[in-house]
Length: 416
Image 1 (cartoon, rainbow, N blue to C red):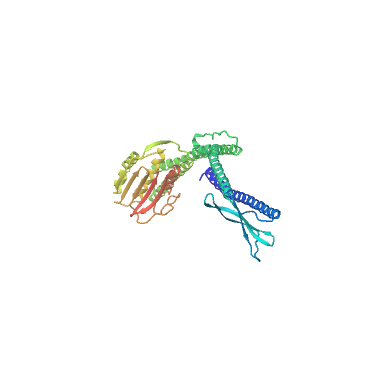
Image 2 (tube, helix red, strand yellow):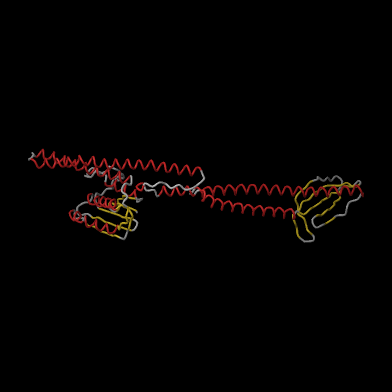
């Protein structure tokens, strides 16, 4: 979830909760104020009745108006009336309907008699006023939330534009091109600092890249030169005089060890170049055509081991280094041949989104760490770097490679 979306969601939920709570409080306060006003009006009416009785020594006539009703009831001896306000219903004689009301029950003494007085007022106007206030509050809340969403949506996107610009440049940054991260004009200090830090990081990475490239080139040159000299001297030594069988065996061991050391040097340097993206020759490659060529190149090896090859190649194009793709295919095909059995089979399946190479072999699943460096079986004559290089090539281009033992076949799957 993006930061702006997360912020909008939290901000919206918080605002909604706050507005709902304040709306409830606002409604309760308004309702209390209007009820208090009705109670004061009822109290005023009570005072007028008391003053009338005191002045004229008789009760006012019972009344029934549009929004108010007054009724009397003579109390028997011993009856008492507690003065109180309460909610009740109000019968509107004119509209012939029952409305919500508020009543005051009190008493008045006239001579030696005591009367209970009930004053009822309609609450329709008060309720209508509360409803109107509630609707207005709800409308204002909706407008505020809508404005808040729109402001956050457009203003935040505009405010965060420098960040996403820098992030986009960092995602597509190619070290081999030696470009700087372009500064997006902004008056926000944090984004200025981010841009400065990103460019400082690029400068350090670029320097490290130059040093690593220089080290890789020098290491390759310095190691290959003495190895070439040793090979040359061994060739010369083998041609100068005859050797005993024991001496010949020792020289053969030295020759093979030097060859393995030379291959190991080349593989390690290749791994370093792949890890640091020092092979930038990107191009669009027709994988189907390249696979067909590879099958022809390996045909003699297939025939020597009497391997049957089944193919299902569909059109597929990738943008990557042809040199690295050639290494990837060579490693996988060589692995399928080397670890197969005489008279076995190899199946090659190419689809637009994956390549699968399956081969017969030992009826046992391989070690789960076969993609690690120098991971190999005891019977293998390789250096244990072929699949590690293949894995690193896949990682470089965002591919995934996996191994499974299915239907008595060792299966390597590369998903593009």
